[in-house]
Length: 319
Image 1 (cartoon, helix red, strand yellow):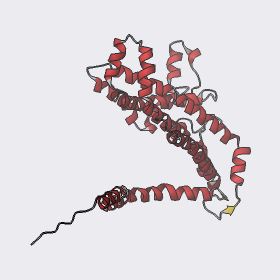
Image 2 (image 1 turned 60 degrees about the vertical axis):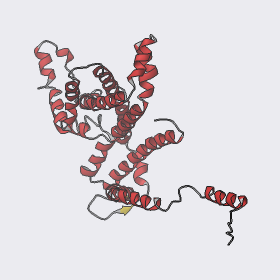
Image 3 (image 1 turned 120 degrees about the horizontal axis):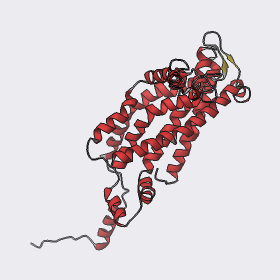
């Protein structure tokens, strides 16, 4: 009996291989359940975020359109609160100036201190963990303790001024928290003392990710310390610098604890911030709608900052 064999023609083989190649990637059945399970993992976090952030934010915006004292009947007034806020409220305008000053100071002084200390610590081989701990200790102290302590030290009668006067240096005694010209900067000083150690730890983490071989090659080539810092450290530390800048800016626009603890926005609103002025309108003046308008405006300022950051990422800049 003759055995007949049937072979696939070359054309058929090419068609079959072409069909296999034309199958779109990522269509494997096993990947779909993985995607769904991934979304399921983040659903609880999204739900909590919606509950504690999304819904209150929407409620604050709605409340900003009403005149309400927090107890009685709310009366719809549209954008009246915002009109008064930006055109007839000098304290709000002053608070914007204060947070801009606060942001400028905290983007320079504590960042410079933290980066400088981090670069010095990286050169220490022994007891480095001790120095890290000492620098980070102020961060662990509650702001009410730090603010209260510095408020006592800056007291015009019982604080540093009494020591200066006792040693014949009365001309150096100033109204640290009572002079409208320096009260805001005195509060900043106390906050810088407690903040820059945290930035130092962040910079230490960033510096630890830089390849030390680059520094050795630069030293072999005879590069100066300034050239090494400018050409190697800063470019490779840019993601950390951008993160610190974004974090500091967002925090500066919402700062509340130190101005409230040390001066309560005084004297004569000289150290008021957006958060303290919102608090006083809500608690002291029973203007829940107006306070909500301040909160919504602050959120708008922060969204501009976040949008600028997202724009740089979309442009492909490595930040």
